[in-house]
Length: 92
Ligand code: FES
Image 1 (cartoon, rainbow, N blue to C red):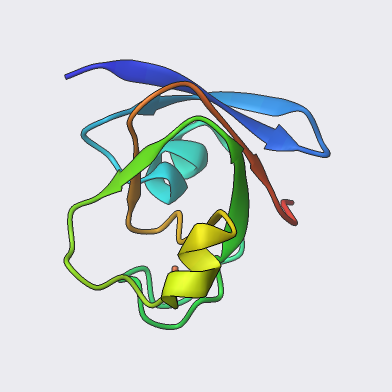
Image 2: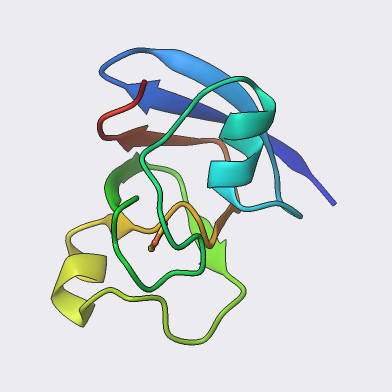
């Protein structure tokens, strides 16, 4: 499986994002804390926006509306990188 580079904006932090691992878990592995609660794609605490690149979900119905998906919102607790990518949100 491939490993991609994820960039967090506006902080500019980067971490390795293996396709085999949710983005949230990859960030934690790199010492970066993202807001999260359920970690299974239902609570939406982790919701942030993908501004560049692509992701894949390994679950059928992540807790996003079709309109939100169309606007680029993702749930990094269940989203896996499918390319180098940039996400915007609040990170610690
Ligand atoms: S942590 Fe609950 S949807 Fe991501």
